[in-house]
Length: 348
Ligand code: NAD
Ligand code: TYD
Image 1: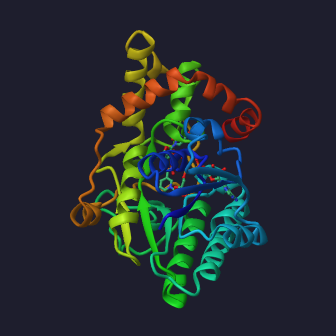
Image 2: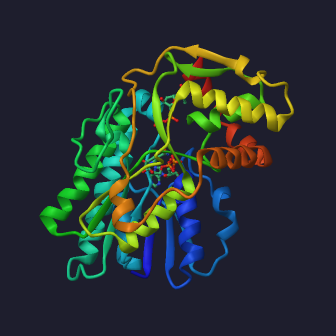
């Protein structure tokens, strides 16, 4: 594969994946297709925009004729699909937006790839980036493995589960070569401040309250975003066609414990008296259908492909906090405009 279409490359994870591919593979032509929704931001990849092997295309994966024409024009050999509506809280207020992008958009890409590659599937690949949330929730114990039954609880995870099923079905029915990876919660630079970690960093800087849902005892498995990008690169190049790989951080944290650690790091960075930021914690109404615990068993990708996280949580969180503090303009640009309306609706 030399001509790769990456979707959602102006978003959080996509921007790190695009950068990695553009820099590591000068012999590839990387096409970044993104609709630039509220979550897409070309500032995330400004450093690579003039690279000779990189092209940005603004467009919507829901627009089937546009997607078909794009494949006909460029004859992509690989698709690395990350474009999605990605925030659980937004999926609770507007599920159809998630059906449109995550389900219909994915099927549009599958159709276009199938049509484009129909005469020859050799060296072609549709790589679908998904989430551990498709497996539903764990109790106090256990881990998600690749064969755990799908049991999604939020409109977001239901839409991602549906897209995973379509990708697999295109493999079975039309022999479309595919791979899927299901990853745990990512954190790191360039994440939109609606997700837990960047939202709380932003609020601590502004001395605004930190809205912890329910009792804060919900558990997530956190992975530094660059380690996710590295895992995708490895699986795409070395993984087996038709396989699923679970990717995780081996790093479970209860929300409240994570928030306290973040407060401690922020107090140090901002030169505030220890304990200052913790006073901003406020327990608020729980998220409906809130999954208790996610935790990934990433031993398959570890054993078969030799992947493991390269960054500890302490290192990753420290880097993340520093990045947000050094990139206040990025944050200010993002939090102007619609952000205030979103925040008001979600938290007040
Ligand atoms: P994000 O919301 O930051 O970025 C999504 C990107 O997709 C944005 O640039 C947006 O403009 C683009 N996009 C949205 N709708 C589009 C459409 N209709 N057409 C074209 N582009 C569109 O998301 P993220 O957190 O970077 O997640 C990327 C992928 O990884 C998603 O598929 C998500 O389900 C998956 N994932 C995310 C996490 C996580 O913790 N963030 C964990 C596991 C898997
Ligand atoms: P989030 O970053 O939205 O990721 P996901 O829902 O995909 O896991 O949330 C991570 C955890 O933090 C989740 O248990 C919900 C919780 N949370 C809060 O307690 N308060 C908040 O304001 C947000 C955004 C999340």
